[in-house]
Image 1: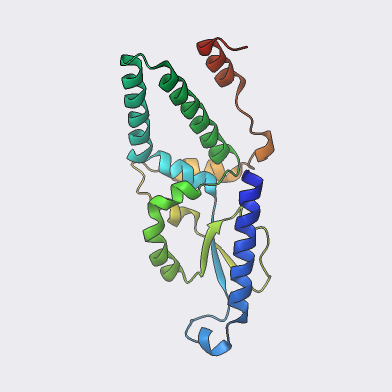
Image 2: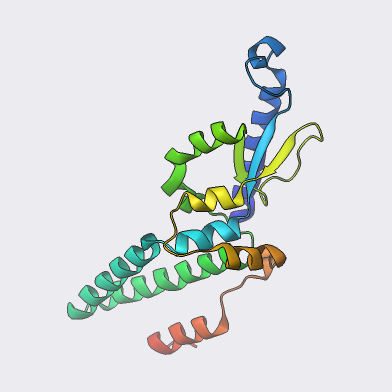
Length: 193
């Protein structure tokens, strides 16, 4: 499913870029530069910045409240559903932090801030560097990781950890399986083998 989503995103980006190339020169004369600029970010740093806000904490509080309510009501089906949701969320976070998992759902939090950043930086697109499979050599690619991360207003300085993240190559996403201990814990809790 993720491969299909990545393929769709890549096709949309490619079509958009082709449309931009066909715009008459007069229409693009208003721009300061004759180059098309693409802003990119390291999605791993973005999810790290997001995790250092109250948004992750709020999500976990809501999940715990729902779980507590289900336990008080002795609703085993709901408890099981919420356990699967928690395991799935943890797995998605690991794909985002350690690999190249999509942060599109997280980026929605700052979508309203991206146009101003794009304008300030003079870029036509802002996209994860892992989703930009190719760009014409005449396009200028600008790393906006630090500036995009700052839009989340993290509650602590993330610069040191962001630098460490950038030094590491992402784990290939197809190697990011659910951890054995998570799966074992679920199976033990629900009597599965």
